[in-house]
Amino acid sequence: EMKAVDTRAHVEMDVFAGFAGLDTPPQADIVSLAKHLSGRNDHSKVAYGTEAGLFAAMAGVPAVVLGPGSITQAHKPDEFIEISQLESCLAMLGRLIAHCRA
Image (cartoon, rainbow, N blue to C red; front, top):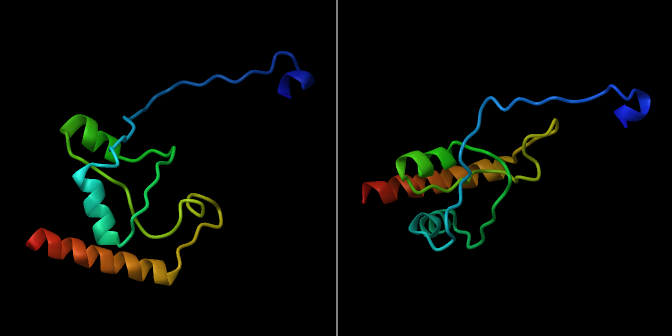
């Protein structure tokens, strides 16, 4: 569309940072633990970046990313998390602490 207005229009991009993607297998122990602690049995992968890929790639630390809210509501101008979702997350964190103490 820009070139239709002016043929000299262009975009240049320089990659100045990057990180490894996270590709934890669904059968990994950390996935089972996350499902157990969260009380859910589903999982999915999304095309967003986190430091979790670095933990796995650079340090060999198995990782999952989970938390309150929905990815469909995240990172948008009207992003929100319901109080009930925060309460569920707090309960899951309590179960994680108990698991780590055991």
